Length: 159
Image (tube, rainbow, N blue to C red; front, side, top):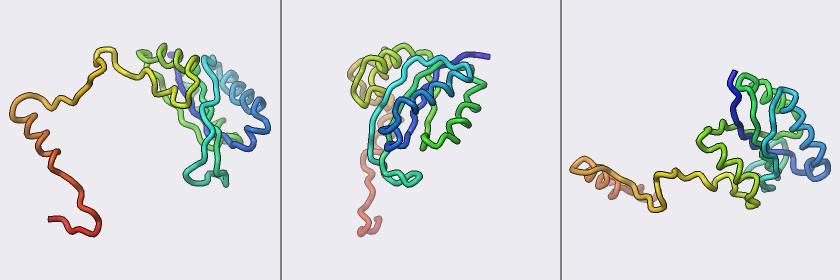
């Protein structure tokens, strides 16, 4: 089976993480290693107030791990994490091999909370990217059709 690179963002119970952070990290790593995963990068991402309570928690610690794993074992790992009482939610993404080196480099070296979004530009796009609606009447019609639209305020009736 192919070995893929994954990124999992864990939403952890903030109060438990503050009290037993190292034990929770060790538990997350042990689960991955039990299924043959190789941890590439592991770090805390952010600590935030939640929009709505999850399991009666109003705050969560976000922790991110990049790892290599056989693709068939991903479902089993997620099942184990979902029954873990420290994990409120989790989101796993497959990392495209095209972006793997860039993402891992940024995850290792960038200390800001938005590190996961840096470096995600296409090399061929360049710095100045503007939408291209095409040439001729079809592109112009498409651009003109979207330009004049606006949603009326709730107290106004549509024309």
